[in-house]
Image 1 (cartoon, rainbow, N blue to C red):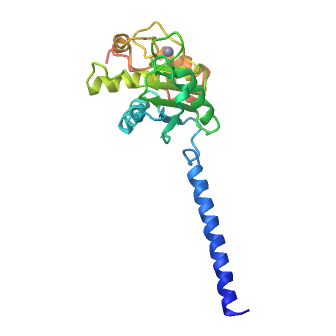
Image 2 (image 1 turned 90 degrees about the vertical axis):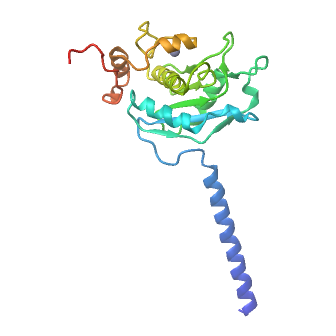
Length: 235
Ligand SMILES: [Zn+2]
């Protein structure tokens, strides 16, 4: 073989290798979210927004604070997904609010096979469902996914109160996915509230009753789902 033919062959091999590595790179980029196989009870927090609206994604600092607060009541592994952008078609045409029910089914379907135990979608868009003015959050009861909005939670509040409200809504919606319904006990985070004042009066943690109901449904969370300490003990 002549020297020039050998050079051509080497060139062809180099081009093929380069193509393979570009394809592999594209495949890596296409991987949806978290590559690490999750623990059996880990929860994925998915920041989501609407195409064309940069203000619809929550700040990263909000997500890390939310996880720190959730961990007080649900001591499991947490991960944060890459931001997920929903199409404008999911907006309510009249009000411009994001349809929480459509966002929930989108997030649920997208991450159902991710291996995570539960998924919590968080948006800064205002969310609603038909016949409601707005929602703080929405969950599949006994389900896999829930979504929440931080849009209204800073209204009339300082940073500390805003964080408290965000943590309450997150735990409330996650509580629904663990099979806990609403309670009339205002000391519990599982009390229903449809106003900021109602939310501010509600408890911020699971009660012992909430925990026992969750554990009858999901016994593998024993030791991981934690009730607020009673304040009226003798010690
Ligand atoms: Zn609820």
